[in-house]
Amino acid sequence: MIYIFVFLLTGLLIYQSEYYKRKNKWVLGNIFAVLVILIVSIFAGIRDISVGTDVEYYVIKHFNWVALFPNQMWKYIIYLVTYDEVEPIYALVQYIGYSVFHSINFVLFMLSLITHIFIYLGLIKKAEQISISTAWLIYCFLFYNTTLNIVRQSCAVAIIFYMVMCILEEKISVKKYIILTVIALGFHRSSLLMAVILPLLIWSYNNKIKKNINYIIVFILCLFPFFFKFIGSFISSFNSLPMKYQVFFNDINSGQSSIILDTIVYLLPTILFIYLAYKQKTNVQIKFYLVMAFVSISCCLASNLMISRLSYYFIIFFCYSIPYSTKIISTRANGRQLYRFGMIGWFALMWYINIVNYGYGATYPYVLGI
Image (spheres, rainbow, N blue to C red):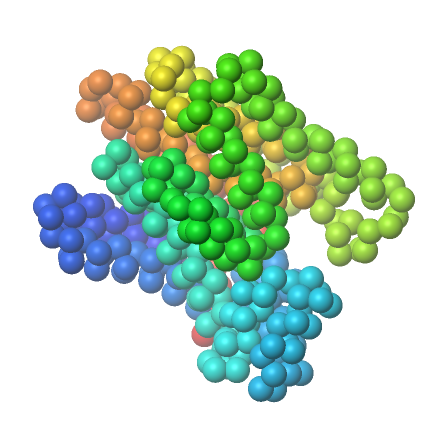
């Protein structure tokens, strides 16, 4: 199947990129890395517009609306922002795709390119500590098909992911933080919430706030999906929300795998992180990744469409945390390899059940669009 081929091909190319960089052949290493980003982005761009539920729902509509504003870029952007409450950078990509390239496939390519540039930059932030090829394969099975569906939010998730990686590396200025937050907001407004919550969580750990306070912060964060669900249900009961927003407060339907299944899939790495957090008591990053895993499970249990969308900001960290945990899960190379392949296989199973079996997001089967 074409998805598996693309995942394995790009995983092999990233492995080659890592190899050349370890040999200090940075030009070759970067060429292979660029190839990976281009392959997955072109693959996303040349798909048929029927691939991805949200593409049919709003991307096509917004693309066609450009025709109503010939040579009026700002009017088009303002119209989308005010009338359809769509973010401005996304609207700009739509305008360029229609006015300059006359192709919706270019729009899909650009959105995928932006997403994968930031995903890759986030993964290589601590390349000396993880296997980028392992992280990439986990990302592909965990999130790639989602990027073919929720194209706007995928850009925002990738940017927030990169920003958090910079914060964990302690290599980010206030200026850079603000710029990245603004760019993420230019694709999806939900990113503002995460641009506040996640850095605060890291700050609380790095500044060694009293354990009791840390536990309270974690407890509140894990309960926030249920709190949001309650607030949403309460507001919806008054029928005061527009129809386009009411759907986000509905429970997840059978189009996605069962709540129990998703919870079990995230539960295995979470149990391993609990063990590692106990074993590495001073490791702040493991504790942070453990919280991300806990919240991912809470989001699954909340089973609300809005919470499901917000959960991607937490789920994305599995593609970094699992490779990071590999080096401390076992002192033996064979043990680390077994763990690595086991986790890739675990998320590949989730991908098959969600994407192939349940058809989540309408991204399977892949259909060529040019």
